[in-house]
Length: 320
Image (cartoon, rainbow, N blue to C red; front, side):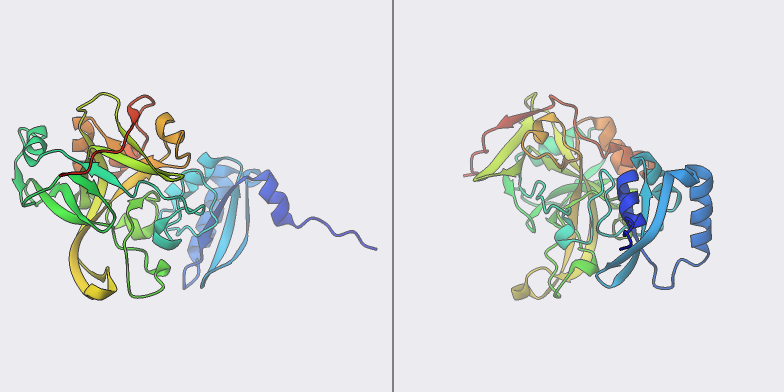
């Protein structure tokens, strides 16, 4: 009886542990396929990658690129930013935007609850020397849950403004099963075409936060600055005047929306949530960079806080 050989794709799974699944464009790759093959051969080297059919994901065909190192995969995605990643990609730091509500493949929930107690005057004082218009009305301190209104600091065309927006950016259309869109609360994959449109300075914002929670069995573990009174902001993105159905009973509404970035966890968060943490900015220079720098510079802020910067704390008291 003839012995069956191991399929080449399985051999490559072992030899090339970093797999990148790419959606095939509706009109095919065309000349981009030749350019991609040439780039891989000259920059990565023929023995350092493999290319196979990637099967079908949902309604889309895919190709599979295998690499020996994450850096090679990242370099390829940087060189070809129009490539659309598909579910099944196993690149460190990749969180699929195509699974429900932007969750990663293991369905971990990342910071869907935080507390905000900084007063409006204190927020304005943090940006001394800059003009900030307060259009937020009354901002009550307390816990913030997905789809609720909360304060953000964003551009108003000339300077900064403090406003309220609804937590949850528009979901990728491919994940929606009905007309209702509950929104995506946190974003990790900045290479996704869905998110790239909102990465310019005009759509970036700062989300004030005093403490945030990560889910644990039976409840939540809260985190706050290790040094009390340290001001913190989530690195956020926002869109204005977005019309969608957030709740069926409300029908279509037009809202200003926001979400914030996530990244790998630091030591404190990793002890509770090993996959991710929010991108938190505590340095005024980082606030300025996030609000104004080109994305090539600003994206470097998508990193964890240094180990030791956070403390595990009790849940904040309910606002009276």
